[in-house]
Image (cartoon, rainbow, N blue to C red; front, side):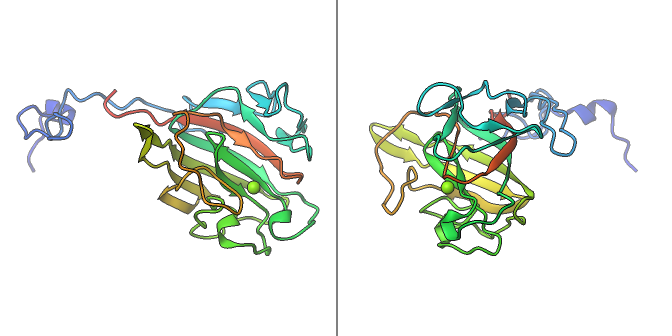
Length: 247
Ligand code: MG
């Protein structure tokens, strides 16, 4: 067996150059990817920004201005107080990996869009649906995991009411150039570890019973959670900026 000299473990400088990056194949000088300690069983990784850990809602505000009117529950979650309005982060976010968990009300009330409805609005504009779709059908593009009004989820992976569900989302903001959309927003999402959106492009911001608008908007925006008059709970909300390679 050929013995690999020790330095070859660290790379090469006599190999062909990759045209996209300018690095050699197996380049020894290419920056090392930063080490991140993964979180244990739902815990955030070491470089995450915590938006909500159950202790405080200081990272959030009411969309009507002022502090968050929703209810902190002792179990580490926050519950919608119906008709108090949506809440959003103080911080404006760009391309992110987002994690959050949500729970439909234990008391089953209403049907279709009227059962356990909330939503996660990326940039405050683009909704991925939160809905109790457990044995509760509705129109496909309003199903949990769907991009409301535009793209149904690949599958319906919701748990029973009262169970906690996880969302893991990769979000890429749209890019506008010269007043026109140059690159659409794109989303990949897993609901309870199951792919529900795969690098799916959005047509525009979320609307109800209408086509999405195409006007340019800011390049970043807050994360927003929807008050749709149902007692939905959220917990363990964090994000990481997706970042760039070779930094
Ligand atoms: Mg909704």
